[in-house]
Image (cartoon, rainbow, N blue to C red; front, side):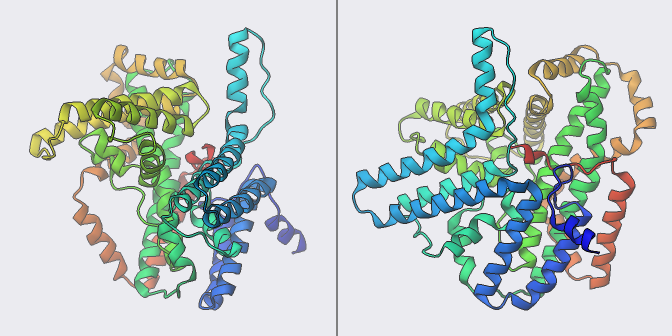
Length: 484
């Protein structure tokens, strides 16, 4: 028993704790059991959740927990300096110092090898990458801390005097490792207020957890097994098989990331907290602008408020607005990964956003009927073609995949594919068709689930878990956005 407890409390780099593991489910059930006792007492609740959040991050990232704690400690004191200092020049100096430290840590872990590799390529020298491992969630919590500091600097929020409150905000485990990027203005007021957990919170919390688990553990992880085959050997499969992998990855990345967000929102809801919304059927967008209002909304809003607007937004004329938008998406692409393919991905989205604004001009009228359907289809295929560069191991691999689709399309593979990969084909059709349904149906399903008895909710959860066990690969699939 002692050995099992020690094993449970220890960090295992080959098996980090994530939401879709039995280990997390076991720990979370114990956590909730105690939480039900302490949640009405503010300080006890904050200390207890903070302790579990630090334990959760340790189980996910090991001793990189110290990097997170150093970030919290540094930015907490900088926020107090920003608030208490009256001289604007000195406040600006403090903000710059805080941003340099936070972004410097992020740059070291995420971009050092990328920079050194490119310098070596320019000098035509051999390159051996440094042994630097990216801490899970560092991009998310760095952006969150930056938004907090900037909001304090601008006077939009007051910093928390309590280190406990700020640590709770930064480490709240549902959103810690893969978002949403929770804004201080939304979350800080919830920290000290009385937590009242209603039946609706419990019902909707379970609904989002089950939906997220189904998306991630069943749909995304199963389709990923096929996608990995195709993207692992680009150019060796037929055009149709490659096309199915492109559609499959479109489903995988959506279900993987939105599934995590759903579980995070659901877990927080069970605890009486609101994390907002992060996805609203993004593949149903009729333009690239609308897509970014529906996809990873917390990141889109962050880039708008802390990159696009500080660059000048649309205040300096139309063409400068296009440039600012392009630069914002370029930065967004680079944030996703230390590779030129991510820079290209961001640049193409930036160009598409500018082109859409230029073509649409001041026309705010929404298209309807066939025109909207055509716009949705065009936007969707533009997005998923760029997902190829997001998924492929190299830029050259992405080009090979697309060449197979455009120049080696043989429809004779359709029948054998459906016969041998019937479940993959069904999941792709089912998952992507989900986006074209009227949003009213989802609300009706959510309300219907709310009204079912508790035993039925547990049964649905067990069925999803059983589906995951039946369809999983040999190892647990980490969330895609853990790499960012």
